[in-house]
Length: 108
Image (tube, rainbow, N blue to C red; front, side, top):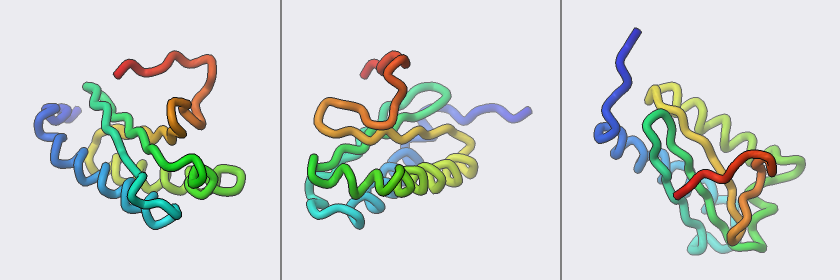
């Protein structure tokens, strides 16, 4: 079994993954200057919160969630290479889209 990388060695990787998600989102939306990606780093995973303008939320999610699912698939492939789990939450203002209402919110 391999050891997990120390958290400090993941910081450059988290930045690259954050830029990847931001770049994909900026290519899809009408207001790319309002795209932000926040990384919440935990020991075993990193949650990426993607925030876009309210009028752009549909463009990022896509029909039946296909665009969001595709972004998560690309994120999963990059996660495998880095041996660190990444999760993508798409956020409109203060609401989290695509999470189970029964799940507790992740504290920031």
